[in-house]
Amino acid sequence: MMSSGMLRSAALAVLLAGGLAVQGCTTAGGTAYTQAGMGEVERAKFEQDRKAIMAQQGDYRVRFDFIETVGFVPDYKVREPDRSGGYEVVRVIEDRGDFISIQHILVIEAGDETFPIKHWRQDWRYEPASVLVFLGGNAWENRVISPAEREGKWSQQVYQVEDSPRYGALGMWTHAYGVSAWTPPAELRPLPRRESTTRKDYYAVLAVNRHALTSDGWVHEQDNSKLGMVGGKQQIIAREQGVNTYRPNTQFDASVATEYWAATRDFWAEVRREWDKLEVAGTSFGLTVQGEPEPVYEPLLELADKIDAGETTTAEAVVKAREVIAKFTTRDIGTLQQRLAKAGVDGTVKTAAVN
Image (cartoon, rainbow, N blue to C red; front, side, top):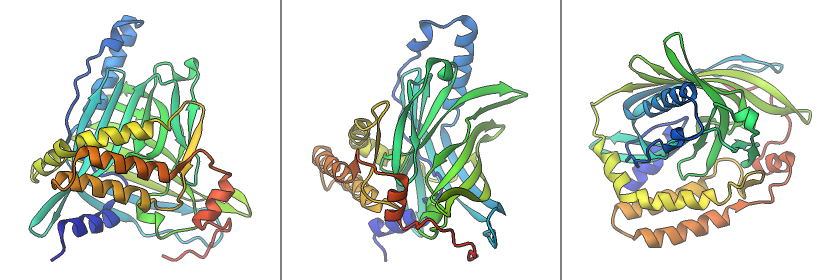
């Protein structure tokens, strides 16, 4: 029989595709931000936006549907649809009024075992001074946003399983025609894990990510353009539509996730603080590894598992986590071409794609 650790590793490799969620704890923060500098109309809109963001909390059955629709390079063969699903618990872990952090944790059922896997995190910030955006090749820039550009808008920054960054964007929440939705302009994001270990013909996704509330949960809609290099130039090689649906579900043991979070949340709070030190407005940073960053996330997840199992203390694990982050991060990101070459993307799309 496989151990819980082996099962978690196998599940992580197979299921970390596009966002699986979890149950956490809410840090009360209040909405003092709304009391200063806002008129009545702006304050009402701000609170309506907050209500929509907070409504993403819950225990869910999630379905992920990704369908490539068209290719844009000669002889490209559209891939078969990719469909998967799982159980997720989604909770607010910090609320400061103008800042809301939501943690997702996947609940895996494997035979007689049920166990959690910490997954992605989404941070929402009102009228942010900067937004952390993906540059390609495991590098990010904390882009400065002007007061005029950020007025009335929220940024969403998405983080990976070990709290390293994934992508970010700035957009406006709208509440029209009976639907609350947040839609930003297209921004780059890394390859989904379902393809990052199997494809070398594109290096990033130029994506529009819409979050919208539904009558029975919420949905994450994606318009994904897969960006490769053709003749040394950036080229959209294919498009894909993605729909992730979150529907409330009570037919699984969410306490597995909440107990994990209760045991490890202090550790993950320190890990977040360490990553935050790199997010200086107007600067960039990256990872020293390219492709799927297993050397970064595997040891951090293992440290959290050891805390959960009582095999180490939070203080001891934090020291080791800081060493991992320091080892695999850099301010010297080089050029995009250098990073892609290191990742094995040679600048030439193999157009005779394999189904």
